[in-house]
Length: 136
Image (cartoon, rainbow, N blue to C red; front, top):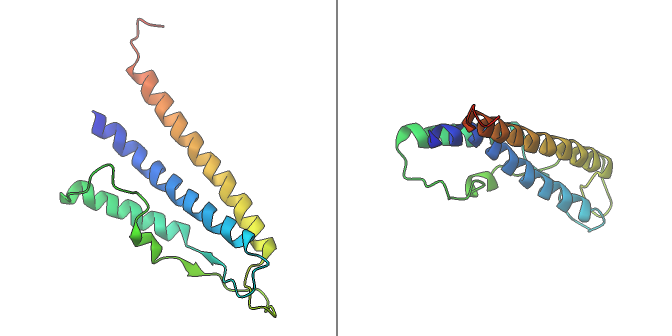
């Protein structure tokens, strides 16, 4: 029973961790907008989520020895970070495009909040299902 509840939340948990990591990268890009030579970085969220959930399914069906407490955002995601392509050249070789970074940051923030709401809704639904019918 507990495994079923955990499995339903795993997808949203992976999405939340990846959103958090992307938020951190975008914030780092914005913070270094004036740093000469800084190379903006980002990663393909959809691909990272697909790989994370595929690895998760392999672990649950393949009998891997992973524990539920292992870090969700592991080194496998480190390799997926890519340098953002600059929209225009800059004299100091900084590739941060503030308009793009701000838009990406706002978009990612909204999606992070939506993921939190999905998780809260799922937990609330599970708790309501576990309540006794006589308690109401």
